[in-house]
Length: 52
Image (cartoon, rainbow, N blue to C red; front, side):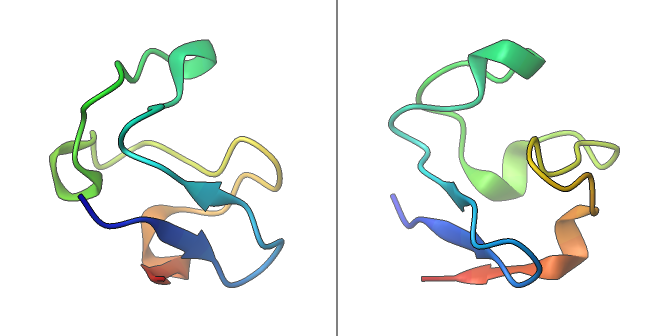
């Protein structure tokens, strides 16, 4: 699975880890995350992320 990086703050979403603090289980692909998910560091939406 591919990692995605936030263009604003540099946070890297790793599907192997997920974002358990925000309800995203490990193994969740970026494209399968809810549309209203935001970066846990800077709160921008998914449109500010790109494949690493």
